[in-house]
Length: 516
Image 1 (cartoon, rainbow, N blue to C red):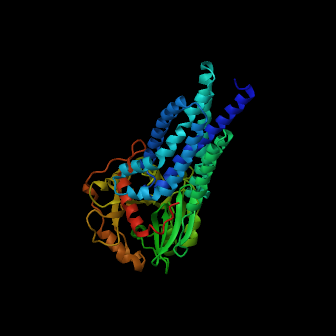
Image 2 (cartoon, one colour):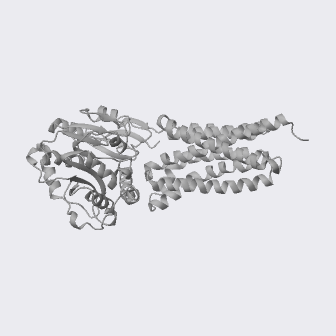
Image 3 (cartoon, rainbow, N blue to C red):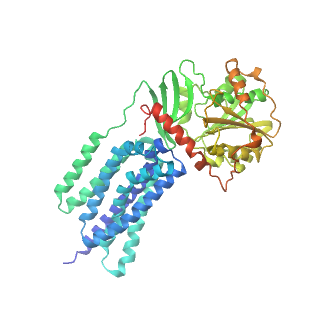
């Protein structure tokens, strides 16, 4: 007996809502994948490539498998069961993510990222990919309406994906932990599938699915932290930020990487590259103004103000960083603070400075659009006569993996006629292939010799060591490449160094880091 038209419309509306929710879940899971993997592999283009590729592979397989299953069993139950199974897979993802990601740490970065993404994300995404072909099959009444029905379902599924992406990326990740978001998605999927089974008279299976989620929620709690160590924890669109007090040192950590280090006793900086920046006022004693791009703990502008009488404007893309710098690292603003991207800022500013300091890290990568010939030329236009552009770069001091900072130097030399570079380390006795900060100074005028007597007494010995570690830029090997807006593989070149640093940090501080 044929369905009444009203029942058909209700069923069609219900399934349209169904694919909207599953479409939203797909994009939410994909976006949360970057949060899941960031503490272990970072957030470089390599990670996003792995996540996007695995998502597409999972959906392709799901479309085929879903079509095969529904042709053999043309009933609603396979749809509901696949959604419940996807929810259970999300629970397993949450429960096993640490073990999976730690288990792939010994692999080469590309392979480890792909294997981790496959194990964690392919199962739930594949199951969700099965939904669209199954609901289309059940709702096509005639060949004449097939195109219209299929188009409607794919349209609302895509709309659901848009909603999931916007809601997760713009709102939820800033206020809700990753584990709770994953469990929330799992609950939604299990409730959706369980509700469908209840409507089809399958009460026992629906009840079992609900029980699975309740047990998982009880077993998977929020990460526990030691309040004596973790002084502050906040989330933003740009990462998980923590302030850690460990063995008389205070650290600012973003997604598991350390960006600022001071002594807890007196707040004195420990990071060598910060002290290396104190060569700037020794090179230009009459300097009065500075622009700091990337705030971190605010140590450089604080030192400039307190000891050298230099006023600093700040450009920082993450609003959450400013109160952390003020509360936990003693930063006090002496100029204007702009919450915006370091490149778009110059499009709205005509100010010029004696120093421009570029110290930007987006967790474990340096934003490539701030390391191009075009951007360096923009900085040149915003320097006073004799002004200096300073860059904090990071890399291996030698070997093939040093090509990243060699390329930064090469690109700076394409814009500025005078360029010097210094290895900023704790000691001049470096083992082979060390991870180091490279501080680069560039100017249109001769840089000259720094007047060390103008530096703070407690850092003069360090400054003298940095000068002894000045890099001979006449014969860098391997040769760097020119980084431009059109071609800039900086993410790929810096990935090995940041992965090595991340692994070292996890060994030393893993027990303290909130990875949720």
